[in-house]
Length: 119
Image (cartoon, rainbow, N blue to C red; front, side, top):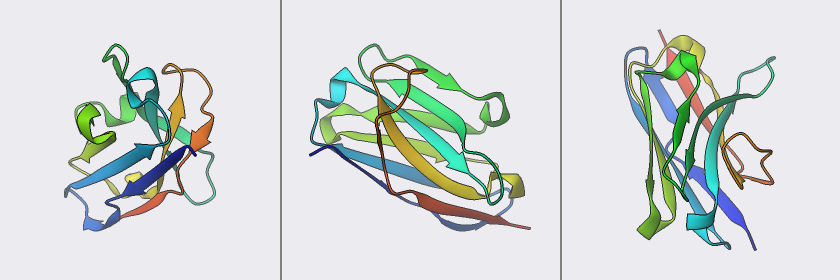
């Protein structure tokens, strides 16, 4: 059974940092890409970053470039999202999701982890 489990969310002050983890199981981790998405209250879900485990390619949306870093620990089937210089507008539920390649539709999603940035 394919499963994606996020952890690491929480409450942090603006300017602070959090590290999110996405643990994957039930499939060959190296063959897929893992993306992070987020959804803020009243807003549509948006992509944040993606890493392709097959070729190591990494993508970021412009609004997180220079602040967020995505990485993959293939030995642990885990993708990390290091989030620095957090802003109030980063407040959202963050989800990780699996796709064959970055940019293609995701077929499995985690349950999400809440990130709240306060002033």
